[in-house]
Length: 197
Image (tube, rainbow, N blue to C red; front, top):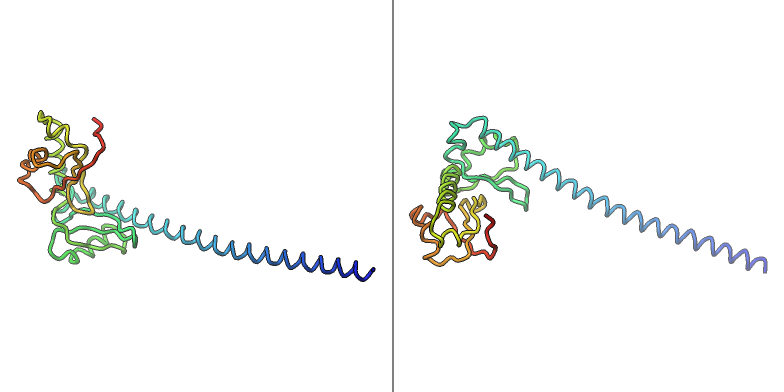
């Protein structure tokens, strides 16, 4: 009986040790996976911070090198956006050979992960058009225009001005289209949201 009690306690102790060992192994495996996820998150945040630093440097370079108060951006610059899949800074260039500007924009951004692509409209032109649209809509006595337009902004990723409207029927958007001779720089999109004024 003494041996069976001893054996029982030995088995109990061995099972406890094995159980503790398995739990620790599982916790260690869980910790490794948690650390990997944490490292991936930290890496992604660092990439995001780097690209935002690049955008800050780009904007600062325009302020420091502006031709005049009226012309802040070079005529070949079409805007920028972040490609979230690879955290690159995409810069639109109106010139037919955007890569010719690679060194300039690496210097402006102090960032190497940039891509230059062809844009159709200069950012300066889009800003001027946006300002004209803003003035036209705000001063418009035409209820058709005023009641139809919800919002307007530059859409960098498309290199256009995006105008959110309640109705895209021709008679509702014609006054704005006529303002810019039906420019392809303007895109009308239907939305259901009412405009705050």
